[in-house]
Amino acid sequence: MTVNDIKKLKGKRKIVMLTAYDYPMAGAAEKAGIDIILVGDSLANVVLGLDSTKDVTMDQMIYHAKAARRGAKNTFIVGDMPFEAYQKDIRDSVKNAKRFIDEAGCDAVKLEWFQQALEATSLVIKAGIPVIGHIGLTPQTAENIGGFRVQGKDADAAKRLIEQARQFEDLGCFAILLECVPDKVAEIITGKANVPTIGIGAGPYCDGQVLVTHDMLGLFERHTPKFVKKYANVTDVMVKAFEDYKNDVLENRFPSKEHSFGINPEELKKLDKRLENG
Ligand code: KIV
Image 1: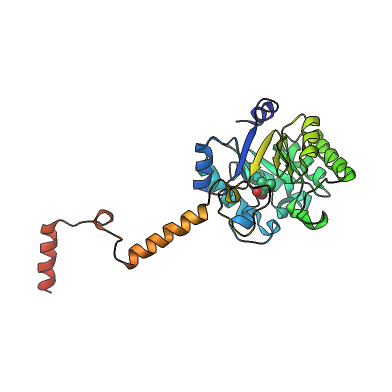
Image 2: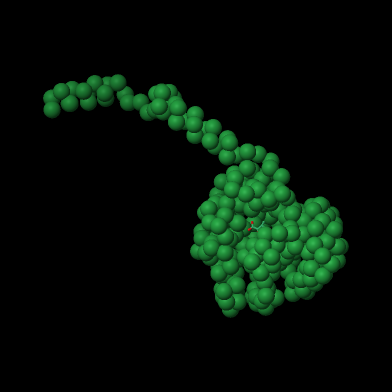
């Protein structure tokens, strides 16, 4: 999968994207044939247990992106630029985007809309790095857009989103991610854009869909947004396995012979003698 392959999927078939932050999760996504892996800054919440995505550092993102790449050698991987990578000072944006490509082996980066999003995106694209532009609910600046709520619900706000999508596309973004946008507004943006739209909480008309893996697996229980469909309850599976293990250890069922290593009986005899002789 290349940037061009992804762009060509628009209008042909849906694009399927999931987040992954480590070797086993990225490996499973690749095995399942997921088109794009996003090493999302949702890492902050679902893996590191932090309250805000703003708190995840560039070094933490690179550490996890490297692990994801080791697990999914052949999948298109997008590194999510954390707040500190470009919103503190847009002059850092190219250096940090390059780290995702050069150090972690990512294929592209994602930037959220904010006041200086166009300048930062332009710098990164001019440096030759493919970018996905993220609009709608942008968690890194949620406090400036009324909090964690659906965006573009009135005509003016919807018009602003349509304009942001057009500006990202004009700058050269190869896809636009729409988070928490009314389905009909996402349909209009998708119809106007020449590049694919990828939705999360943006209804069925987008060119692709993304979910946070820990949400759809039932592996993050603190909060599950309305737009998440749970495909499994992995926390329940883990708790059951841990309880079974605990009970096996307490009741001497584990380890059994099949999980233990033997010693040649002759060697054991020799050892006994040596111990007898001091
Ligand atoms: O960080 C993340 O997981 C995201 C979601 C919108 C997929 O950006």
